[in-house]
Length: 232
Image (cartoon, rainbow, N blue to C red):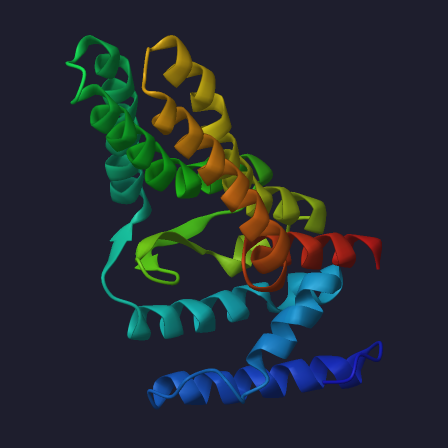
């Protein structure tokens, strides 16, 4: 899709959305309709976002609901993930009082619960503070499946790209901080050295993954995309 200014581009976007609506109604994917190119224009140009955001959101949600299962309402997902985070903190707090062989495994269970539960929760908290709404929780991502949070495009496209970047980056930042924050907790809790080393290695490994993978396919790719939109 070209990016001239004015009505010709509006016509292109409207035509792409017409094709996308027809594809969804026929049970076909959005790929090839021009839908995502239309979204890209709306992300970069507030006037087009204001004009087309509601229609984009309706099409995107219909496609999502037709193709993604299982999914949960956002309040239910927040409740489950919040319970997981509380359980993780409780396991970490209880671990030092357990026996020599069981305490490292309780600590690792708490660490795992925090890693899984806090990522999407952080996206939600930062996103809501930025004015972005969400429609569902779902399981997605590369194996193993993990909780994901579906964006409501009507709100997403109407907030400044800097806020969108902050939402995308927030979950990744928290996930990478957790193992490093827990290193001194494990040390003061008299955990074995292998566990302290493991936490450090997990943290370093996640940083490497962010540097070499996520900038091309995941949260940091979206952060860089939105920062570029903010500059241009």
